[in-house]
Length: 409
Image (cartoon, rainbow, N blue to C red; front, top):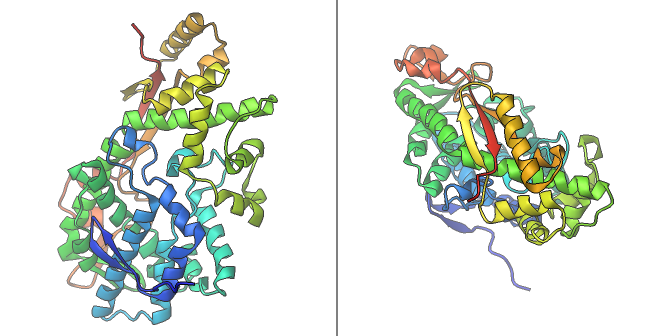
């Protein structure tokens, strides 16, 4: 049997060569639970808008690991004591922070399973793998949960300026071809420091942070909340909803055993035991795509058409409004669809619907980004900045959408 080399080098299109820092980290990456991330798209259905957006959660996890390595080296250079065990814990926490994502990432969150976030499932995966690795992930899990006594370490993994965001903005900008998201993550990392167990940014780095927050806002409206991408994700959610309805009524649907289990069972947080986790670990984008390909020939009008629309990118027409949608317009579109295809109002509701999307680039309610001034005092980035529009970025912006079929000639 061939012996695997433990210290691998990955060639990443964003950062160049990424090194695997330890045998323990290598073993996590080699685990089937982690390898599954190669089959989970980073940006859900966004490839229907930006054809290059086919990168995966695997790419993102390795990129986040690379940035964490840079950060650990930088903080040590500035005199912050980080032990070897803590370093390994940070790498484990950031590497596995997204391991709980389901098919198409956020698109099907809270849908395949009810009321269970990907962060919760990530923690379940980490705890299960901790058994396989002789409890060596314990410190990484504590950092991930925020229970470790050195609080700044959790901020590096999960905050408004963490390695997760620093990677995905730059990476998603690259793969979508949207330059507005191309932040200078290395410059931001160079300006990081720790004061009173809190992560801070030295004053010289304030412009890079401003650019980061503006880039985040632009990427959300231009990419993550692009109206066509939102419509595609809503179709995917409705396909799953319809499939579950048909199964409950006694229909038989062709799909993989893993997908079938979640369609046939109502799984909530309290149901998520080791067996369910094992089944979830076998579920990825390919299960959903494969099922939809088969469902395009199903006799059910709703399931057949929804699946065909998504696979063939024959999507619904989407309109964004600044004010709530006029429900009379919604009813009009439903009535037209019912008459045209002789379907019920419930069936028409799968193709005609409305909703809202909101975005806040910087939340004043969450852990704030602190700027460290030369006199040793800190202030919130919105107060330290001379950018007048930075305060505006902390206010939520809500838009309303309506979806309905495009008129056919």
